[in-house]
View 1 (tube, rainbow, N blue to C red):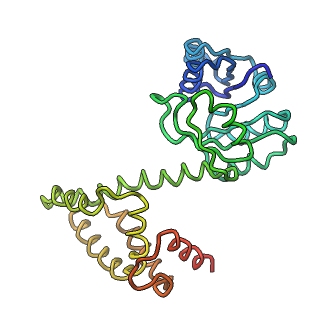
View 2: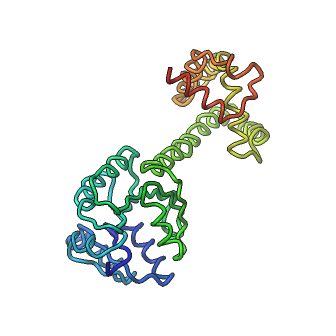
View 3: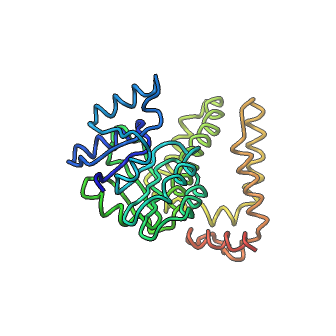
Amino acid sequence: MKYLIGFIGFGEAAFHIANGLKSEGLNEIIAYDINQDHQKIGKIVRRRAEEADILLVDSLEILYRSSRIIMSLTSSKVAFKLADQVIPNLAPGQIYADMNSTAPEIMQSIDRIPRKSGVGFCDAAIMSTVPGSNHKVEIFLSGDGAADLMEVLMPYGMNLRDLNALAGGSSAIKMLRSVVMKGLPQLMMEAMLPALEFGTLDALIDSLNGSLKGKSVEDLANIFFARTIVHAQRRSKEMKDFIATIEALGMDATMSRATCDNLQALDSLNLVDRIGPEGDLDFRRTLQVINERRKG
């Protein structure tokens, strides 16, 4: 292959990654963007390509026939359709890396697209914002092309982590991390707004700091999970009182209602005999117990 990397889509993320790789001395990069000749959007694409000194090729076919690694950075809406156009035409030794924010099921579907022996597929989940980090942004890899992708690109300073998992694994981690990072602010606001109304916001923050400060995710999971199951019934009743309180203030209790429902669901699983009355079971084993009961 004449080029090491071919970007399908040359938006903001691809531009910054390419720019970073160029700074490491990797010059064998090309790109193709379906909008590169668009009257308005094309100006932006071409300006980025010129700034990064990246050649824009005339067609998708030229790109995938000329590049060892094809990086798709387009949109989740077209991720499968695009992969279905490209992957069956690749030759042994080529790697197709989908870097779109896409559901794990789509990545698994892409992985099932028929391809020649020796063609690798990599589910590559970008775990943070690219501007500012460029090619050093953390990227999780899964799929049979992950190891080869790491071997080729790590010398150029990329921050890659092979999860040694099937395709879909990287995208699943990104999605599940997002559940926590997007849900936690909602929980905090739902608790802090009533505290502000009662004039006790600082006291609430001090109390939470005392409970949470300095603890790792593993520490918190060990504190929370088993004890939550043991005390699920009592805590669900306490949540009902909290819901009534904040709704009386005219405030939203969506997260609290969901918490109450989940506590009741956990209580209905009757797991205390498996967890132990002290609630001191390791969080990994606790999750296994929940999953075993959930499956029947």
